[in-house]
Image 1 (spheres, helix red, strand yellow):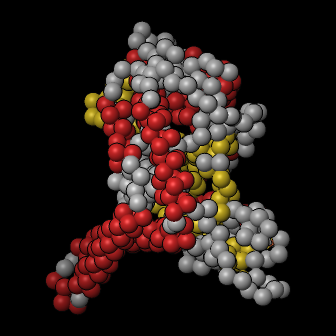
Image 2 (image 1 turned 90 degrees about the vertical axis):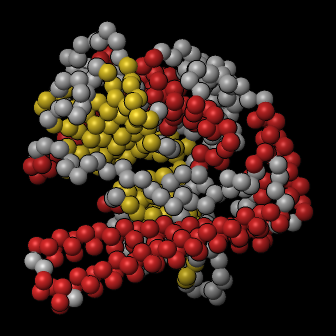
Image 3 (image 1 turned 60 degrees about the vertical axis):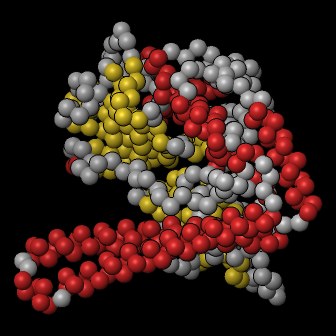
Length: 491
Ligand code: FES
Ligand SMILES: [Fe+2]
C-alpha cells in the first residue's frame, strides 16, 4: 500500500485544505528527519548523562563519603533515569523508522498521476468539510474510521500476554496485525498476512526472534523484512510493520500515517495501588458506543442492579463535574473520578467503604480505592477488543487468594453483560436510523464530549480544537456506510 500524498497527515501538510506538491512534501519530510535526528541526539545525551552519574556514584571516593543508604537511594534514582532514557530512545527509534519508511514510500510513489488523483480526493474532502453540520446526529451504519483518528498511540495488548514464543493476533481499524517479540526481546507489530500467499502469520510460531509462517516457513523480523525462505532461492521482500513500543506493561502501536508522538502518557494508577487483574474481552459492539457506556455513570442504579450498583438509591440529580479539564472530573453524588483519554481509554478511581460498597461522596477522602483502566480497541466497525486493568490500594493479599483471577474475570464479565444487551440494542436501533444522541441531558456531558472529539476527527485538524470548545450539543449529521452483524460471542 502506498503513501497518499493528498492524505499526508503532517499537521502542516494540508493546512487550508490545499494540496501539497512534491517539493513541499519532501521539505516536510526533511524537517521531520532533522527533528528526529535532533531528538535522537538528545536521547543519547540523556543516557550518557545518566551513565556518567552512575559512574560518579560508584566512584570509590564518593563511596567513602556517603552512607550505604544514600548510595542505594542515588542508585535507585539513577536506575529510573536510565530506564526513562531508554524508553525514550525506543520511541525515537520507532519515529525515525516510521519517517524513513514514509520516505521510501514517497520515493516509489511520487509521480504526476498519483498527485492528480490525490488532488481530486482532497477536493472531495474539502467539500465535505465545508458542508459539515454542527449537529450531533449519530444515526445509521457506522462510518469508515477517519485517518485523523489513527494518529494516536493505541495500547493493544498487555505486555504480560506477549511471551517470547507465541505471536498475538490483533485487529485494529479493520486490518489484521500480529505482535511478537524480536531477537532483542522487544515487541514488534507486522501485517498479519504472509508476503508469499497471505497466510495469517499469527498462526505461526516465533523462532529465535523471527515469526515463522506456518505454511511454507518464511520467517519475518519485527521490522517486517523476510529473513528466510526455506527450499527456494531467497527473494528480498517484506510485509508492512507499525511503530510498536512497550510502556507501563502495555504494548502500544501507532496506526496512523503522521509521525508518532514522542510522548506516551502513563495509564498506571498512583504508586500505592497494586495491580490485581488484567482482562481481555472481545465484544461484538462498535467501540464508540462502548466508550460512551463506560463514560456514563448515571445508568448504574438502573442497569447494574445485580452487580456493583446493587442497592444503590436513585439520586435526585447526577452530574459529571469537570473542575480541571474538560475530559476529566468527578461524579456528583458518587465518589468516582473519571477521565476520557484520547483516543480510546477511560480511567476511573472509585472510593470504596469495602469491596463493592461506595463510601461518602468525595473520592479523595475515601479510605479505600479501586482504580480501573478500560481500553476500547476499534477492531472493526462492529467489534471491539476491551482491555481491562484493575488495581486496589488496599488488601494486597487478595492477589494471592487461589482462583481469584477466575473470580475477577467472572465479575468483569457479569458487569459487562448488564451493559452489553443495552448497547447492542442501541446499536441495532442506530443502524436502522435512530439517533443515539437524540436528547442529551447534563449527566451525558462526558459521553457527548467524547463523541464530539470523535466527530471532529472526521474533519481536518484545524477544526479539532474548535469542536472541543463548543458546549452546545450538535444535532444534525448523518452516517453512511455498513456495519457487521452483531452476535454475542465473547472470550
Ligand atoms: S504462505 Fe507463508 S510461506 Fe507460504
Ligand atoms: Fe455500565
